[in-house]
Amino acid sequence: MSLANNMQLAEYPFQPHFIEIDGGSGKHSHRLAYLDEGEGPVLMMLHGNPSWSYLYRNLVQQLRGSYRCIVPDHLGCGFSDKPQDADYTLAMHISNLEILLERLQIERLSLIVHDWGGAIGMGWAARHPKQVAAIIACNTAAFPSTRMPWRIGICRWPVFGPLALRGANAFGRAAVFMAVHNTMRPEVAQGFLAPYDSWHNRIALLRFVQDIPMDAAHPSWTTLAAIEAGLAQFVDTPMLLVWGGADFCFDRHFYEEWRRRFPQAEAHFFAQAGHYLFEDALEEIAPLIRRFLAQNLEQL
Image (cartoon, rainbow, N blue to C red):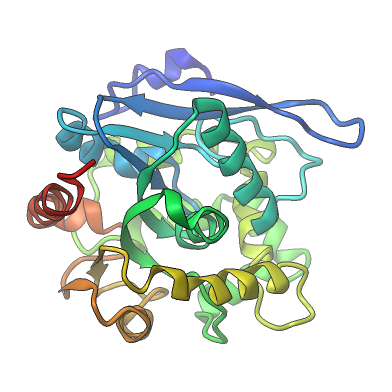
């Protein structure tokens, strides 16, 4: 996807920045894209699958007047390169985030995480707990679970999964309908889908689904278990839970699990908001986030 396409996306008046990521073991380096908008205390916003930095477009516009909003596109997503030979594991995404923050020389930040962003962000945080000022978790997980909706489970089937996700873009197309409670405007749906316009460009959508660790035999299970072990470091960290209750994947069970692990967290549950909760309830959510940040980052 070219920068020219970027200028045509609804509600996305941004120009991405890029860093080079070493491919390792003789592989070519890759470009990782990220938004860097505004000045002030740093907010790192991390998306999941099958979205990209477009997920946070309106939240960035609301917060960049007071904060520096950094929003990466994970490798394989958005404006980032989509190499066919990357391993696309949880460990890789955490490492890429670590490289980005080192390059930008960010010493302290607050996390806003959604979907896979929870595991990726908390994976980085577990290694750098003193750099985390606050955490905002939205419809996500950072701990193992045996729960997987059948609609996602079948996407992991051999042959069917690649044909459906890479061939028909079934995961991305389904999300613009199933991940919201309110009907998404066509131009916004096109914005979510724009980076994933070919078999080649849908590599990460499949790899993310395949990388969900459901048991100890999975290659990413050890990584996720280590993240879970590190969560206790943040029991006293200011935390805001903002949850879309109409999410068929990260449902109320996950919301309650976050509340159990972090009883001090401020928590808000929006029963009529879907997985893409910023599409359904931004007018209610944005003031909560602004107030939470103002109260907890005023010393930074």
